[in-house]
Image (cartoon, rainbow, N blue to C red; front, side, top):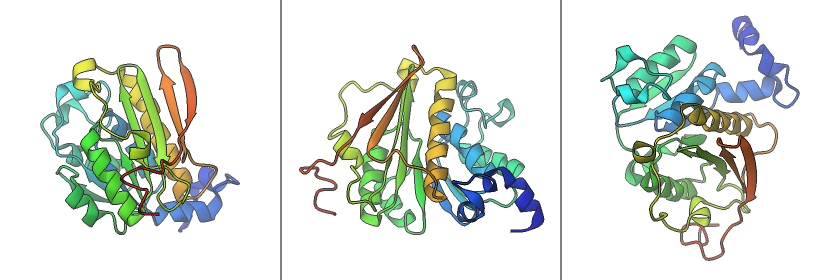
Length: 249
């Protein structure tokens, strides 16, 4: 790490929980971000500015004007541009040391199984149950930790799954099946700053795990009710009959 980088990351390096070794770990880490909407737009700038060495960005969508109130990495001038390209431009403006791999595609299970080797951590910012279940299976197979975030209307949640840990539940332990009548942002709306709260917490969990520093949310679900500005924490346990993880560990 050169003098310029030491100065840039000095506030991380001064942290006893992180220090120089932790920052070096961040600089040599590879994070996959699935989804560059509200959650991804909140998490991405912090990961890039913090020096995470390689960021693979996956989204098959383009920037629309209805995205702009909450997806703050995108601008009116980029409406119609692929979100991965808009995000790549944002990273380049923040930190030239970060390598970006942009994938304009859907993160299906076949692609995930090929992509996860070599990835240290995944952020699921997709707002798509099918992607989450596919990621859960692929992450279990490759023992890749991932941070799950969700936000709709005025409610949000975040947790971390770490298949390397024998005590870690998986996503299907938490949600055995797709919830009937599940809300989505396009139909129910979402409070713009809410995605910032949850996406930023995803970035916090990512940096802590990669450094490593502190205790992760593994085994705990943190929920946030923006109506009352209240956080609550729920314990998540492994299910002995879980079809995804019971036979893999």
